[in-house]
Length: 92
Length: 161
Image (cartoon, rainbow over the protein chains, first blue to last red):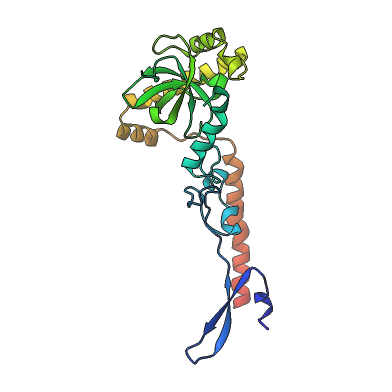
C-alpha cells in the first residue's frame, strides 16, 4: 500500500521497471490538458494549460481571448459561426 | 462593384466586437476602413477595421465622409435600419456619455502624440509624488512595528544566552 499522502485519485499510477529489474508503481501528479477547439479540435491560443491551482491566480482575461466564443472555438470556427447566425435573416 | 463604400452597414466578423453591426464612415486604404457603431447603439467603437473582418449587408445609409456619430444615428433611424437589425435607439444620456468619452480619448491621444516618448517618460519621473492622507497612519504603524520587534529580538537574544 502506498503511504497515505499518495492514496489519492489526484495522483496517477505509473508502472516502472527499476534498473535491478523490479516492477514498481510510481505516483505522479496529474497534468491539465491543453484546450482545443470544440468543433475542429485544433489547439486553442490564449487559453493556458495547467492545473486548477495555476488557474486560480489568473484573472479572467488571462485565461481566454477577449472575443465571442473565446476559449471555446478557434478564430476561424468562430467567424463561421458568427456569420451563419447573423446573416440568416438577410438571406445568405 | 465595391461594397465597402461610405455608408454601408456591415457585420463585424472578427475580434472582440465580432457579431456586431457597424457603419463604414471613411476609407483609409485599400485594406482598411474607418468604422463606427455608433457606440451608443451597437458598442462598436469608432476605429480602423480591416476590410476582411467585415461582412457587408444589403443595407446602406446616406452619409458624407467622416460623419459624426450623431449624424450616422440620425440616418440609421431615418432609414428604418434600427428596426430591421432589432437595435434600440439609445437615450440622450447614452449618446452624450459616449461622445464625452470619445472627446477625452482623443485629447489624450493628441497629447501623447505631441510629446515624443522619451520626453514623456522624463516628465512623469520628474513630477513630484503626491502626498496622500492614508500614508500617515501607515507610517505610524511602520514606526510601531520595529519598536515591537526590538524587544522580542532582545528577549530572544537573552534566552539564547
